[in-house]
Length: 362
Image (cartoon, rainbow, N blue to C red):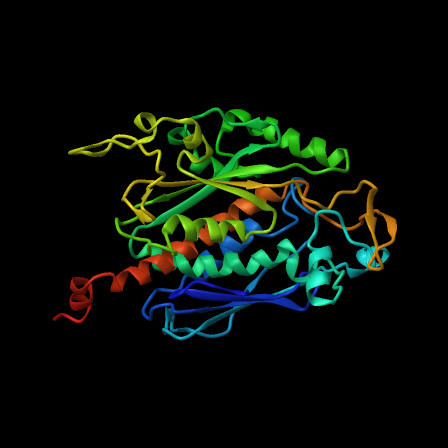
């Protein structure tokens, strides 16, 4: 569906080549200081056309806040944000308007809805994620009140993956890096992976590492709304994401319990293989996640496909596309994790009677 969240919710709207994209964020408590500059800065991190490592589509991605804010503070009513498209090149897609692009959602969308919006993928385009980043920025304004922070960066691209331990990842450097690289020792190699793929008219995948700090103990709603379930659900909903790992992730399947268990002492947990979540509930440690992005399916090599009538044909894509969608995807991962944490924070208020009485001072 187009709405995410239970208490802190957002609904996105718009298409890649439509007039605008945007979101309506509902469930935002009144009285939060609304930081317009922060909102725009987050959108600027994701916007296309900033360097040779992303699509050359030029969009300013300027946010217009239409409602829900008065005299600099949230009012408790829905916050509507719109971002107008400025640089659509729909004509780039006319030669394939009746052809399914390999590994795109064209095929499944057509068979589900019976409508073929060939202009850059329509709703299925990664352009839609601009709305998620906007909503995530609003969520961050709530999380700031509780010192909960979320950072993401690139751990690996293609065959090049950092060998650093997660504790050594440099999020400060990632903010300066054109590709949000977490390991300055391999930044040039990661850039080469992207440029080599681009020069070959191809694309390449990436791994994003995210860390949530200062999470309180107790977030997560077992059994079917566990925090790790919500995180996986949120991240798997991002375009091109094919796998999500929390804590030790797939390594856990190769470990013995004596290795995987996080022992405890008076000072807290002695390790963090669980990635900050036990029984679907946050345990107060860092919440650490890896998100794996497939290569951008839009490449400039001729590929075999079929048309809408099921006939064999060749597909040759034009236009402007990311040679590594995972790079800008790092910004979207942060946004979706912010939304999960904001929603979990509000849901937790009713978890026991003492908290409810405290809220009403009984």
